[in-house]
Each structure stands twice: as structure tokens, then as C-alpha cells.
Image: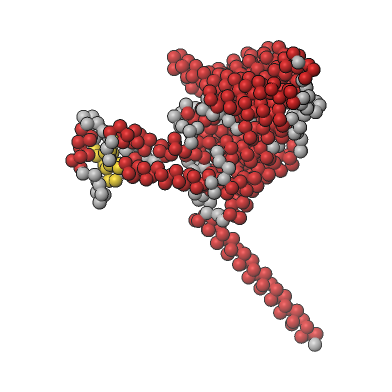
Length: 573
């Protein structure tokens, strides 16, 4: 009887062992099939949400690491334990170090960019927008990593920019890697890029709502339902990473609650919005003007490109000797503005100095973003306006700090061209949701005014200066995505253009080169009324160009219509 029980137990254990072995093998095979399916056919919706969670967590970690890296390097270089009061501490630092640190930092940035980027330019949010619109959600990887390191050095050594630009592009690099790994199509690639951006912004500012909307409003530039859920998942993941590291605290703490005194005070915020819009335009145009001046000086004086950031660092160090407030991101000065701890003339002087410092940093190709500087300039502008307004009409005015808060949002929204997400970022940065009317009024007026004076935002204007017209919408840039070589009918096509007519068009100069796009072809069709235009390869010397095919107007229009339809389907799905 005992032997029978032992035999039954042994058989039971063997059956259980075999069951778990088979289950483990089935699980391994299922994981393998899922892996192959994701690699070959792309992820399903649920799988994509899991991937969005991973990308969000990774991007949040990258943003946190970037911020901690800045704090570590900054505290080491300037020998301070409290970088939140770096500007105050700089008054005790030997003047040689104040100049030397940003100068050497600029030298390192210049050498790094010369080695790893073909054009010596730091990648930022504008390049992420370009990647979303034109490159299927992909950004440059090697150049992006070099730009992140360059921006880390810049912000640690005294560059007067912000950390959100490099963090957003670094997150874009992670999304690009993931898109390549899962063989994502253009729509999935753009959505992954949006996920990474949302997580990076939310982790940088502890602002999950604004992070998600920033990715939709600024990077993807649509609010399609299919993109919303994974982007929100990623944004939450980035926020969790940030809060586990820094705690659930607001970036700025207001000294007291700020309320509108009377609704009669609202017209003042309309005026503040207009003033903020003008200040934002001045900030943007100053950056572009300084960059043009830097290009001209570099060409005229023939100094090497790698020395350009070093020269800018030296200039910043010289300004910081008297005005240390221009060093770094500037959150200490912004916090003082929001607390009202500043006189009128100080606020006005710091606005001018910050615009100059940001322009020098950007013109020197040192790296960094424009959002944090815009917050500082906006806060100072709003405080100055508020001190004047409350001084003239004390009986119907609230606190001047409310104007600082509204000005901070208004200038930043105009610079980013993102009124929705910027308004929410201001609320989440300060934790003050009671001043919505004032902030919304100022933001709406500033963006309405500034968008008439630049190409909607700093980023889109920057792209327009590179001849990438994204501000006007898909109809303005889709043509440039299709090369004539991909649309043309070759000479051996069954419906090819008659060769003698092609030769006649070549003789009269009506031709397209193989490297041109439909953007170049459509004006020729409009001007000549031709049904087709020959495509030629460039000839050497005096040889006649080699005709390789022809682009038919009907084919060009068909390609353009399909592209528009696909874009509309993506944005409204």
C-alpha cells in the first residue's frame, strides 16, 4: 500500500514537472513568435502601449540623468552645494574662474561638435519637429548624442539657455532606436517620437498633462485619438521617474496665493499679452540676428568653427562678472520674479541682459533650449508690467506677482507657439490653478500677435530659415518629400514620353535634375503648361545631359493627393 502511494506521488510530481516544462516551452515559443511579429509586422495596439511605457520610462530616466548631470558638473565647477542659488554664489567666486569656466566649456563644445556633427550645429526641438514631419519620426542619432553632451557642458559651465531642448532631442534618439528595432512605419515612428518627447518634458518639469499636450501640439502638431493614449502612458511614466527621483514638488513656489482683485483688472492682462508678444518677438529675432552676425564674422575673420562656442563663452563670462544672473538656466531669477522680490529697474535690466545672453549662447552654437530663458524673460516682463500697473491703479489691482506669472506663460507660449501646453506647464510648474483667467488672456493675446510677426514659433521659424516650410502645413512641405527620380516614368516605361519631345524640351531648358523634388517640378508645370518634363543626369563638361525619364504632371498630382490623404487620415484617426 505504501509503495503504491509513493508511486502515485512520484507520478504526480513527474506530471507536474512535465506540465510546467511544457508551459515554459509554450511561453518561450509565444514570446519568440511575438518578437518576430513585432520585428516583421509591427506591434499591435496593446503591444504598442507597452512599448510606449518602456520608451516613456527610458526618456524619463534620460531627462533625470541629464538634469542630475548638470547639477553635478555645475556644483563641481563652481564649488557650490546649492546650485539653486548659483547666481548669489558667483559673487564669491574669483573673477578669473567666472570667465575661464564658460570659455573652456565653449572650447570643449566646439571641438565636440566639429568631431561628431557635419555642420557644427547642436540638434534641438526644431530637429525633432522636422523628424516627425519629414522623416517618419526619426532623428539623427550620432549627432543627437553629441548635441546632448555639448548642451550638458554648456549648461554646466555657464551657457544661458535651457535644458528642455537637448532633453527632447535625446528622447527622440531613444525613440528612433526603438522605431528601428520594431521596424515601425511612419505613423508608429511619429507616435513613438511623441511618446518620448512627452515623457522627457513631463520628467523635466514634473508636468504630465503639459508633457503630453506639448508632444501633440508642438511635435506631432495634431491631436489624433490613436496617438493620445500611448503618449499619455509615456508622459505618466516619465513623471513617475521624475517624482521618484526629486519628489512631487513644484519647480517654483509662489510666496502667496495670487487672485484677480476685480474682473475690471482683466483688460490689463490683455495689454500684458500684447507686450509679452512683442518681447517674445524681440527675443526670437535677437537670436536669429546674432546667429547671422556670427556667421558673417566667422566668414570675414576666417576663425575656425570650433572656436565660435569658446568666444561666446568668453563673452558670457565677461557679462557674468557684473550680472551673474545670466549664467545657466536662470531658475533662481525666475523664482525671484514670481515672488516679487525685485525692483522695477532690476526686472527691466535683467530682461535686456537675458535676451543678450541667450542670443550670444545660441549664436555661438553652444547648445541648449529656449523654453527656460523664455520663462525667465516672461516672468521679468510680467513683474515689470505688474509693478507699473499696480502702482498706477492700486485700488483695482491685485499682486504684481500675478502679472509675473501671466507674463511667464505669455512669452513662453509665443516663443514655443504652444498656447495650450505652455499654459498648463505654467500651472504645473507653480501649482497655482487659481489664476487661469489672467494667464489664458495674456497667453492668447501674445501668441496671436507674435504668430503674425514670425512663422508661428521659434522652432518653425528656425526651420523656415533652413528652407523647410512646415508652418503652412502639409501642403507646403509634402512636395519636397518626393524626389523626381521616384515619380518619373523611365524611358522604357510602356507609357513613356516620346523621346523626340523630351529632347526638344531639354533644348529649350525645360528640365529637372535627378536630385530635385516635386517642389521644383510643380512651378515648371504651372509656368509651361507641359504635360511632362524630362529628367536628366548632370553632364560633365560640354556633354549633353543624359535623359533618364520624364515626370508627368498627372503622376505628380496623384502622388501629392495620396500624400495629403494619408496625412489627413493620420491626423483625424
